[in-house]
Length: 310
Picture (cartoon, helix red, strand yellow):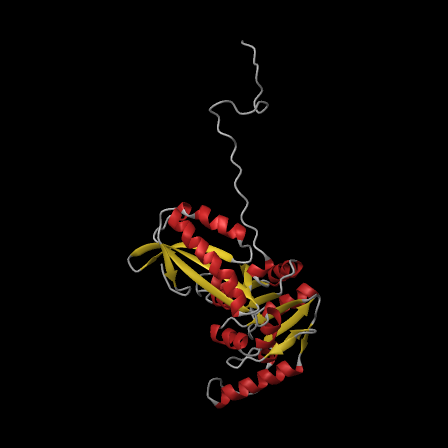
């Protein structure tokens, strides 16, 4: 047997060898580019069974993005107290500005979200007088309009007024169950009903003061470019270079079809104290992207940020 003169891994690359490839780290986006962090914990056996489509998470993501924040995590869980409580404790430990829970506020036995919030933070469920009044008034109205057979309170209806100690009810102008706000160590936990119309009405109504406190009155804007290629890899280096130079701007690409055309949509977004401040952030990014994409051999032209494609 011949003598071995090299040990595997001990020698450097020889002529013709390919050097190891170390992937580039993704651009580090600033907190200004991302905005306040939000997490969503959605609970519902019916969603995980495929009986109901979860449109609530999508709507909340779009709403938070439009306010200048970012949803960094969204979880979908069964109606299980321990599982929801574990996720909420982990969410608060990550220190977002806001945590939404969705679903599980109703009168039935499998509506367990508030019990999970109570367990997660050691806050017993207690009958809240304001919440009880809200539920009572809603059911009186429902009965008067013929939506329910009786107006009085019963055990199931009182269940919707039992909140974790220290929580406050949020007026639900559509349904019977109030939303709930609980603040833990500087993190706002907002529990919303799973009925989309009720969820939207609370977010756009009684939750408005909290949203203003979290997101402020900062201006947020998105701009879009449409590139005449679906091959993201052909322009990825252009996007990476621009992102490195502009960490306060969020840049995202997505291949899609608009009508019969195959394109790559690039969305750039930023938040700032004024329209002028945001324009100062976005305008050079759009210009550099357009120039860099042209140098790569492709045409880029303005698109609408909300333009739908497939």
